[in-house]
Image (cartoon, rainbow, N blue to C red; front, side, top):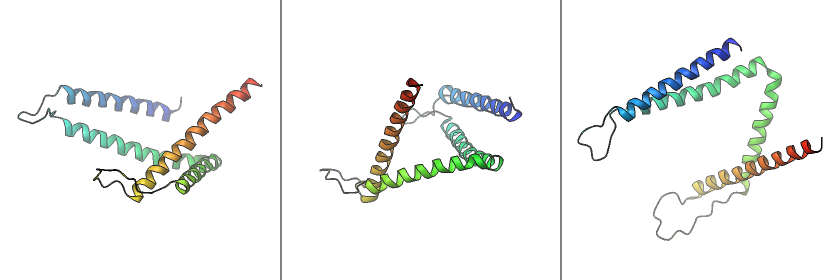
Length: 148
């Protein structure tokens, strides 16, 4: 195990431990009196902790691929091909999606607009394509294993 792996394992356990402590404080820290609904005292603390974890995850998700790219440039080509393939799938999904307004009697919301409907269709078609691709790849892999 490398030093980086050991460090990341320790960091993971520290973050999990702190999360457990914050959740315990949140659930057992009491309620704010005279509120219309049950309101834990430490809600802001948990929300700030969640935001901090989110930003750490986003930061590491950006930093580690860049480090990997610098350390292993040949492996970056495979990653870039994967990103390109995903972009093609999203492009195809966008091209076949429809933004036609829906006839929703009694609906007075603001989400029945072209952009929102086009985005929703794009996401759905992308998930359909990726789901079908996952099932197909599992079937092909198993078929190849059966004939070996």
